[in-house]
Image (cartoon, rainbow, N blue to C red):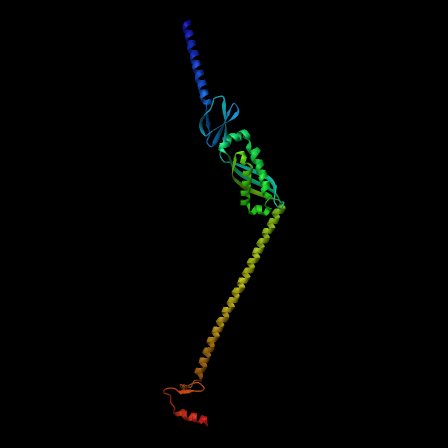
Length: 281
C-alpha cells in the first residue's frame, strides 16, 4: 500500500512537471512571436534600446523576454486643427480651421520612435501647422484668402512639409476648411458684393436700353423705307392713271427727239401734212 502511494505521488509529480514544461514552452514560443497588424510597422527594442531592425506587417520572430515590440501606424491619418489665430497681409484678424492628412515614413519608424516618441502629433505636427498658417496668411490679403483658397492650401502644404521634412512625416494633403474674419470685415465684403451686384444690374439695364433704342431705330428705318417704296409705287400708278385718262385713243404718229422725228410705220399722214404745214406758217 505504501509503495502504491509513493508510485502515485511520483506519477503526479511527473505529470505536473510535464505540464509546467509544456506551459513554459508555450510561453517561450509566444514570446518569440510578434504579429504586426496590417498598415503598421514594428519598432523592436532590445532591453529597452531601439533596434535598427524594423518589423513588417505579419508574422515576425524576436528574442523572448529580451526584445519587445512597439507598433506604429503607417496609414494615412487625419489631424484637424481649429481656432488657429493669425493675421492677413492687410492686418485682418483670421481664425482658421484646417485638416491635414499625413503619414509616417515606414522606413523611419525606428528613428521616429527614438527621436520623437509616439506623441508626435502634439509635439511636432500641431505646432508646425500653427506656424505654417501664420506664415502663409501674412502673404495674402483677407480677400485673397477667400478667392485664392486653393493656392493658399497648396502654399500651406508645401511650407508644412518643409518644416517637418526631417521629422520622418509625409504630408499628403492640407485643406482649409474655414476662414473666419471679424464682423466689420464680413460687413464690408457684403457691402462690396451688393455694390457689385448693383453695378452689374445698372450695366444690364443700360445695355437693355441701348438695345431697345437700336431696335427702335431699325424699326423706324424699315418703316421709312417701306413708306418710300409705297409712295413710289403710288406715284407710278397715278402717272399711269393720268396718262390713260388723257389719252385720245390714237397711237402716236412720230417718235424721236427735238432735232429728229420719224414717221411711225403704218401711220396715217393725210391729216398730218396740213397740220404740219400750218404750223410752219
